[in-house]
Image 1 (tube, rainbow, N blue to C red):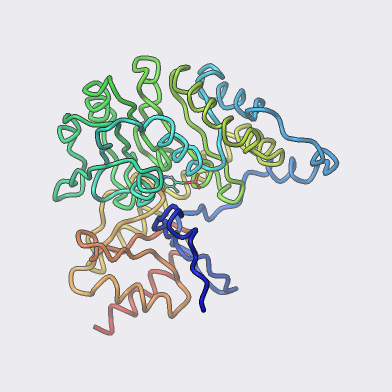
Image 2 (image 1 turned 90 degrees about the vertical axis):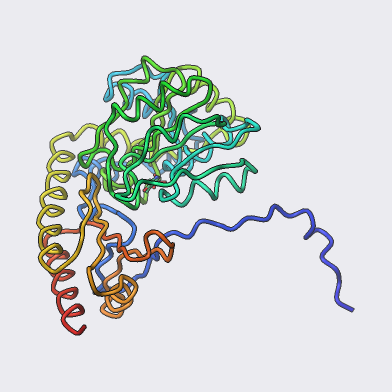
Length: 356
Ligand SMILES: *Cc1c(COP(=O)(O)O)cnc(C)c1O
């Protein structure tokens, strides 16, 4: 007789987030997870080369102290206003756990980073999705209703559209009783930050990542900035789960990246230039392309189905992202790669569309 799995009744049931594929083909062009096509700064290479592996026998610094201080310096705030975590996914999930404990639902847009509903589910937080306007912009007035907290990605993903800081401030000002999280994963590519507002609003948490603009997705470094009260609360919860989340190598590499502002700005500029060129090329081929303030484009062809283009690109080992979700099923999300990668991508799209 088959033994009954009695423990199954006590398992936390969740439907996990599905990230973009990580294929490993030598000839592939990977434009599906918004990674940066350029390598990390030369200063990162140097710190990595000189790392003393014997240091790894010790636990890392508590609260990633030296990285926290470097980030505070870089942004001109106090180190008691910075919290560092293992990628911004770690920071955001911990923020959900720490701040979203109200009976009322939290609010976020219907089309946004698809990890938000997953964290809400795993932590048993109720939520309501506020529909984007028809042009995929966020309506600030939708966030005036009663709620248990708010999370907004700005610029938003996968739409690539930025929301003006003044509009975000309306949302923060209308909700002094709950924490408002602004996920600025893409802000370095031309978005408007609300970071200065943390001095004015103690309920604002701004979250950033090294994964996109700093070419360090593999090191897993993310951080949050906010009032001392918010940061203390995050630290208390983190230290009740795992004291040493940030490893020694990531801490040192995170500091090194901050020290090379010229390289940082020049790679951002390259991505933004390529974005502009790719957008016009796509428009000439009959795509509607949203105005992007990120390192990706959100594009829909006037006649050829997005899923069809997605599948045919994949056959040519060119990976973009497609979401089979009602409002955005006609769109492709295309990460901005190097000039050479985008030329190959555009050529493939031209061929695919030509067959219809
Ligand atoms: C990529 C991304 C993140 C997570 O990035 P990490 O690699 O975990 O730092 C968070 N929010 C948005 C909107 C993203 O696109």
